[in-house]
Image (cartoon, rainbow, N blue to C red; front, side, top):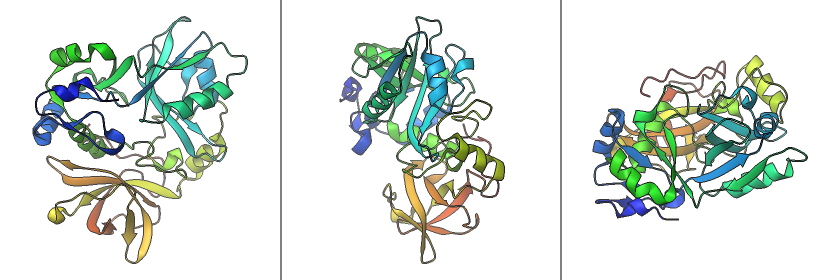
Length: 321
């Protein structure tokens, strides 16, 4: 569904999976600087919203996902993954719990993924006192740097969809998705389904200790996560690419990344950063030398480590977040 904020002055709509919200409002470089200064907000109302309520919700989510929901405090942002039995990431959600038996965990997910997540959860409900519903039509997602608290996946807000215009007046200036994506990529934060594929395990994407809690009990796919964490060296690693900007284009999402004549990975999301220039995230084979110049969709690209190739569980410090 299209955001009502596309009527704001200068708004230019995004495309692909991000259609429905503004890519920018006239100057994505200025918008990036404003966000870095802690000003303004980003309309993410194309993301889908799932609400999980009932007195058993946290214990239930604890048993199904990678996150330690039983110790989750109210209003603390968190992320959780659902894995396959082999440890591949099948679902990713980000949200907060309101607390109390009558409360709810409200999560936002990538556009087009809520139905599959809800279907999975309902299949696994059994006798648990929990309800799951898609509330996208009534609840919108925004991101506001002034609301960041220093924990992973913070700054997101849930807003009544019919109050978005009022919210924009109070929280402005509006920044588009291009600015938001540039800053996210620079932080090395993977986006599910775009920077990952059906084979991705959490250790490859930098999700250990953020979306994965290593001290909790059993959940589906845990054996793979624990084994790779203990032994290190996941099959692939997330990397940030510094792209050659001479062609004045960005690589296509999903395009091949090559080293010499060999295909060694794929490009995820990309953006133009106001200081770093064109950048992208990519998933590449672990054994590719970190100092090698790669080709991303035919463009030369240098690497900046996100996931350590030797250990597989250390993520570089967030120097720009």
